[in-house]
Length: 355
Image 1 (cartoon, rainbow, N blue to C red):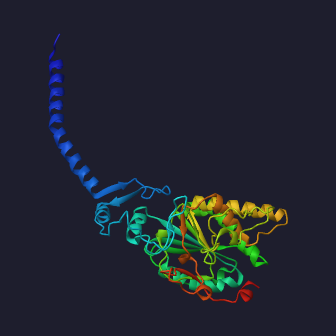
Image 2 (spheres, rainbow, N blue to C red; image 1 turned 180 degrees about the horizontal axis):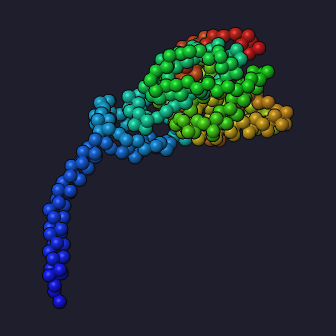
Image 3 (cartoon, one colour; image 1 turned 45 degrees about the vertical axis):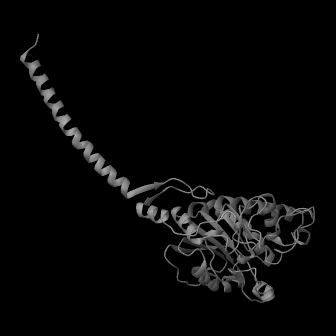
């Protein structure tokens, strides 16, 4: 039976339904308006230009996308090599970085899109603290300009760390460590310290690590062109030589041993790096090999550099830096093949500094 109450409820539901139908188009229009405004203001960058390491997703302004897409630069020519006087590619297809082989403007944009932070480790132990001021001042002028940088200074003399003006987005962290009687032990324990802090700290603070000697200065641009999963630098004293002349560790009983018929390049111990994960793998492996040698009464001929060369022989770097990135002008002059001298030694009395 249809009662008056039933009719009243039905009419009320019909009225509410009609109101909802009237409001629905309005809701749709509002959603489209605000959704369009949101999407037109921000894009999510979810790709990884270059594909070398996993980077966190960040929000990217539309203007940044437009700026990147409208960059004007010379078109690369497939049949015209950028350098004909030097090797620019390893047999395992890793680029060798020389002046004239890269466009820094393109690379800067790529790494800015990733919001990259670079860590630079340096050891200023004992008298080597005297080099720290020049190192930091020249790094501020030439190293990773325009990008976020954290300087990690390992020292036994924190009071001697100089006050250096740092640019925006750059900071200095002092890590107090013990010293050792012999300079050789100081050198070799770098691998242990970098491995330790990579796992416990660096992994959470930076995307890449660059590991450098302190008794040097930056002399020209050193930027994101060096960054890759794992990079090493051609030693300035051996880049022209053959493998038989390399000063690898030749004693088979050492963990750093490399046979005379093996070897790609001789890498300098004073400038290497990569992603934090890869640097951790490298330094941990080198430290483990050193500990094993020490237990057997062996010390590699060139200490941590010998272990570095052994590691990079069997774990090929994804980029190789030319000797522009480690050079001794006093000893080697300035040959024409070197268009720029980027990171150079500082004249010093080794005996006085080491003792």
